Image 1 (cartoon, rainbow, N blue to C red):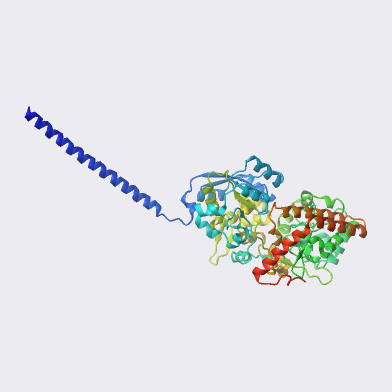
Image 2 (cartoon, rainbow, N blue to C red):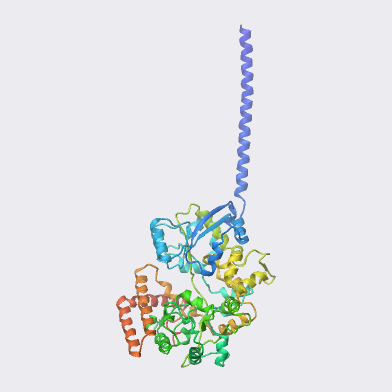
Length: 585
């Protein structure tokens, strides 16, 4: 019995030894596994990326609300993401797919309803950084700070946000709450030129007067360079071409920009290019006090009384203006060479035949009376369409990294030039050579170009204007007639308005603020008065409408706007080290 117990004990001891060895082996294996896992983790942690968007390129989608899409860019966005090599390239790089909603209607009304209902999507694009709805969403904690998202998820992206943007748009805490796209910074023209473009001194191209070729030839001139001759030409059109409106005006507001006639004629009549009325003492008065603007309205009034412009023209909306333009319905228009000599000319030839003389040719610029020399300004701005990332976005880290790619050099070349090697190539000197078919389509049919290639206008809120002008600008105004006329009519007359302290001073008023409300009412009063002044029956009525308008805007508080403008102007002058009012003549 004792012997049996001894044997049993020996067996148990052996089993315990084997069990111990097995446990030691398992522990050793687990330790080795954990060590290997740590090595793998360490290896993953040491992977270096040029940009954070490269860290995760798995598929994802996000929605964008964008009612202010430019008309010529809508078709490209409507045709969707999946049919575009450019879109697919961006998805390959980032994993992202952007679904754009273009709602119809007034942006303000749409935004108000959307915000109240809480139905805003991942990203919202507003027509301007001054939109009161950006402020409303920020105050209600409905949007992310771009600065916060960049710092947390894409710190390398900080190098892609210009210091000038932060200086103009960051809040008092240094936070950027929206991205203000399409800003024209100080050196954009030089950078565009380095890509091979010819930006005509940096002037905005939509500031050239064109006359219909047949009417100008019948008038006996090949050019017009002063307001008296231009006026005489308009009367000639009235008398000899009854089916033509002598001049294209504006939609509802005599001070409208863009292709409206005031864009060019503000300098002809001596209005200040800042859209204010600066004084020699450094103060800023509102434009309705400017005698030069009143002279412009008086000129329009005489044209109206003499039947050169009709009452119907004063009620034309943008659709009516475009319809008449693209049917050669005007004797003179304000436009750009890349429009008049390309899309417009192509349309007119399709309508009237390849040999038609109902085409438009450049004239001017139009100098004023009493020694007023026409001038234009180097295009500068602190931005336009602006994007916010909302708290309804479940993947803000992916969205901010998507935009990180868009803002890189590769991203900008892609959204504005296309795919390298297919749509463009970079030459040894840094200039860009464009695919001939792509450049030709951009030059002849801008809407068709955007629709086919999904470039430029489909990305305007996130475009760096150096690339816009350097790539699209080179296609729109290639060497030849387009470029020659643009440089002839603009470049010699270009000044740097910002160097005189007029750094977009009218943008100093915060959208939706009490002062902005006052300005809206003042502008409405001025616009209504101006339209009535143009249609007034005599000088006495004209002057009374003006006097009543001045009384009204003073009652509304126009002085408060002038104080804000003056403070902003003086601040700009101080930062530049110049004396306020020194450049005022």
